[in-house]
Amino acid sequence: MSEPLPPGAAADPGALMPAKSKMNTTTPRVFIAATRQNDGKTTTSLGLIAALQRLYPRIGYIKPVGQRFVEVEEQKIDEDTVLMDSVFRLNCPLVDMSPIAVEPDFTRKYLQSSNNEALVKKIQKAFDRVAWEKDFVLCEGSGHAGVGSVFDLSNAQVAKILGAKVIIVTQGGIGKPIDEVALNQALFEKEGVEIIGVILNKVHGEKMDFITDFARRGLKRKGLDLLGVIPHQSVLSNPTVDLIREALNAEVLNHTAGMHNLVEGVTLGAMGAPNAIPFFKPGVLLITPGDREDIIRAAGDSLVGRNGDTMAGIILTGDVLPGEDSMALIRAMPVPVLRSPTDTYELASKVHDLTVKTRPGDARKITLIRDLIANNVDLKKILHAL
Image 1 (cartoon, helix red, strand yellow):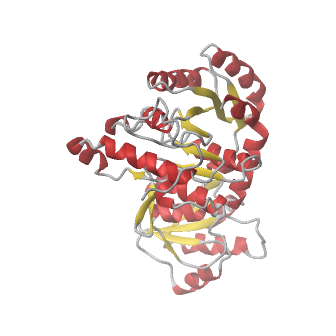
Image 2 (cartoon, rainbow, N blue to C red):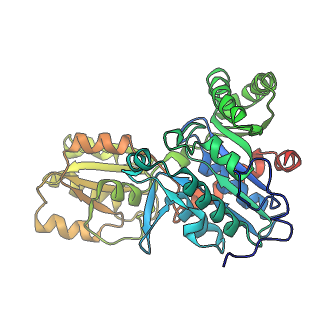
């Protein structure tokens, strides 16, 4: 027996719905898309949910197609869904908020069986459960408009299935972002999906007024509204020590409360200790071979008597650990010390190329995101367009 829908939900199947299919079409919703991966879709979604909760106490969230997932109670759940549920306690099963996880062999299996109707029904049923007794549902896409086209569930197609209007998030600028928006706009329009506007993300402060003015003009020529301009905040691009630990599968050599320290820079301990000391600055991650005991001791001495205003952490590289005296010093350090067998320069390259995603424990980032969206996105214009 299927779960009941909100009053009136089944009365209008909606022109966008596939034949012989009914889905909730009454609960207000919006679909957040982007011109590329890592343009700020999740940041925008998180901030918008916080802003919307002031008007709609019961918010639902769904990421119909997820590509980066974690195991939760033997279910593959998109990591952004885990974030939203952790921050907002959305009172909905995680499996409904993340109905389709694109595993490594997902595309191959689809091209063999082409079970599109089953996937569409799965998304629709998940949306109905997410929207049940909710005042508003925020839907988050995955990458640009065309992502998922290979298995017939592009962002444009999913937005059509959900009967949702779209907001496109793109990186700050004028020419390149508007060119990319136009490409995405073409695919959404091909599917008959309305774009209500664009949010520019990561705009440097000194260019805010200039870019806002000319981006608004450029988007207007495409028939699109500028809904917000979000200033660049470097802290949102900085990984935590714990994120680096997870990405590198590194071993933790001590126990501190500093795993959520933000890494604002990296220094390699490949010089003599006296020359390394000036680089032991607040927020720095020190990467050094495990047998450089002079560097390790110098780093330990620099931490003595300092409360909070310290390096973010230390990673020891290679297969060699320092002697017991140095290990005792490491265990007493107030910052996390990790160990990885990876070569120093290869490890530094991996840290540099790391994709930084906001995680449930990033309280400082989450607070900042709430404020950024509340102060720089025109929520009234969005709701009027919906």
